[in-house]
Image 1 (cartoon, one colour):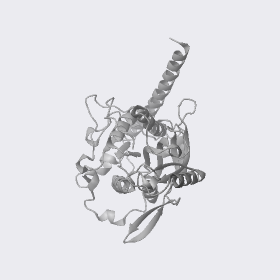
Image 2: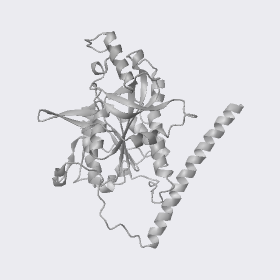
Image 3: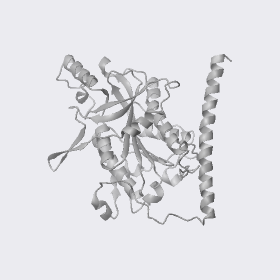
Image 4: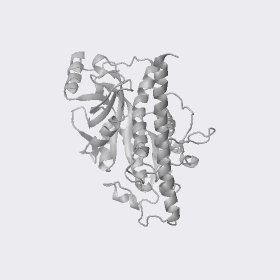
Length: 378
């Protein structure tokens, strides 16, 4: 065996040992907490648990039941606090297959397992719109393409968090994007979401009138996720920058390869260069709605996307599928590291809880080493 191979093997083993130690330490803290509770007679906090979300529709309390139509769930047939009350992270991406893959991946990264014969269950299968998988404290959902689609999902996921009385959930969108002056394969963590006029606001029409909501993202969360990138080991760059959210894939992103194009290559070049001068690092189609809705509900939110091409060099995605598949895993890696760090590496928080080794199959649960079907980039 060559020295380089031996060195790589040693580094990999050291990394795996470090991860196992972190998981064991977290489990030890949880066991100590359980023993303490048993000695105290398993006393529970007498205060009723309430959601930390704010600014929500006051009519929600009157909805008996509240029907989350597109998720195929309602508060009459599902005990939301029991099934979803432990959710701390809500991760979402475009396609069902991508988020099923991520659910299996994050399960492995945070040390969960179920019987090898068990398969992940799509909790929202009855809704026939989105996919939804629960892996311990992590909820993985597909959001489709564009602001209208993700806004529907977010309305119902936010209501889910409210009914489940979740405390301080973190929402993260994971996806692909077109880079602006960045190397393909680069991961961009959004500092701000802006529209095509460079305004940091999500505009909707309510009763025929324009209403704008600030598209704010949590700066500290973006920094925390970026800190999970290791420039010495990772073969890609991770940066923080502004993200432009377009309302379609072709004309809204100044592409020249759509069915219609009423502008010149020079106009396209000028517009993209203007974006670059304004520190815009990528273009995608969901960040405005994501940022606006999460910030309105007092939810910490982050958008983490990989650039699958540099739009200054062209419009069509010509990268081989196997390379794209590797690139789209990069945001997943960073987000999984962040989740693992929050769950297991906060040694100052003795009350942090380790998820159960085996998730409930009825609630979606976790998977083991099964693989979901491969998905194409958005």
